[in-house]
Image (tube, rainbow, N blue to C red; front, side, top):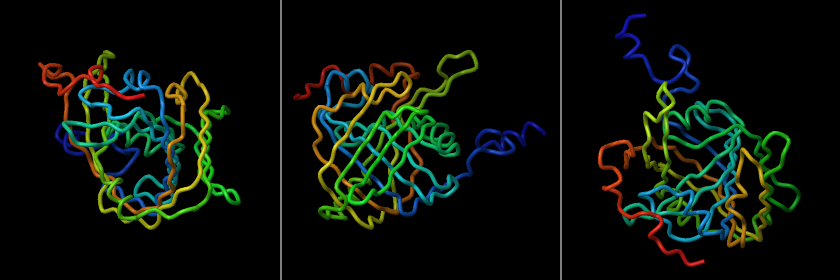
Length: 263
């Protein structure tokens, strides 16, 4: 294979048989179960990278069922997303995600920088309860429950929330083990159609695990929960901050340590 052929055909790994196809990536009947809870602000400060700014000491714990996704197939995901702001614009920082399907693990990490690892999440309705669980191997590390469709939410408002910017820390190492790419990436969900949204009483339990440390952001108080079903397209991202560029630390807007969060 000639040099030019390699250069022009390279999209993802492996070269001749990538683990995922080029986008766009459309999701049909994507089902969210999101529990928002109050946590330890000091624990958040240790996790959220500058130049993102913490806005409140809360975490969104998510279980996401994706039965029909372009190029990725049928899978389920679970993890933690943290409300932040960037240059005054509200958004979310994706802290860690666990899922049960290789193509979106590879594509999510290589394209956007999603912090994805292999695990066994589930989301299902059990009689009158929406139940989300996450196992890492044989160990249960997260259990979320909500009363099923107790009260409808405004679909337009939920679509607007889904369209807000999301931020990721994309890291790709060099062959010597040092960071070759270390960037803050922003992406949006696009072409959103919310088919239904509901809320109800909820509970969330997180358990300690050395390699899946969801419990390091402890649940102090469950604040709200929602169940949303939507069609959407996962947009490709843009780099908003390069940590390896000269003067990157001087160009940051404000350090997280300087932000005061009410407990």
